Amino acid sequence: MPDTKTPTELTSQYTAQVVADLERNAKEQERIGGEMEALQEQLNALRHDHAVLTNLHQALGATTAPVETGPEPTAATSVPRQKTPGKSAEGKRARTRKADSAKATTPRTSAAGKPAAEAASAQPTLIELIRRYLTEQREPRSAAEVSTALGQTHPERRIQTNVVRTTLENLVAKSHAHRAKQGTSVFYTAVDAEEPSPGTEQPAKAEAKVEAEAKTDGA
Image (cartoon, rainbow, N blue to C red):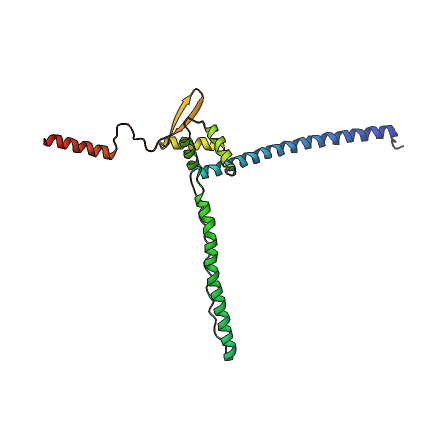
């Protein structure tokens, strides 16, 4: 006789199967969730790197290369067809009107593009903003203080502290700023462009000194 299972045994078997499926489902969710978190972290890191590189590009004073426009279309030459004099004259007048309208449109388009290009070039670079800010300060400033001040006055620039610190170090390397360390903090000050370097004299003073010595020797 075939084996028969009671309802209780069938229920227990189905329950065990459902429990096993739930465990597999939970493990699969955990695995996929971990992969999604890792991918999200990679995406956040890439976005952060993109922002840093963008600010570095601005800090170096690079300007976007102008987009080259394609060559102007040349008028296609066509073999004249045998038409009546009236139709030929009308065709010539139509082509002349099209050529005149194309010539009139080109100057207007180029003139409209000039204000946008001039506005983009007139925007100061991050280096100029930092040097201007340090020149206006009477006390040393840290990179965080410079970043905060510029971020408040230029919120559209999205200025970051690490980019400001890199720019300040570049200014120090080029002798355009002074760097002073107080404990674990680093402060920066502007270099006075009009202040003569130690051991050197201004040209006018040096020339006056030479003339005075020459007169003394002559006497």
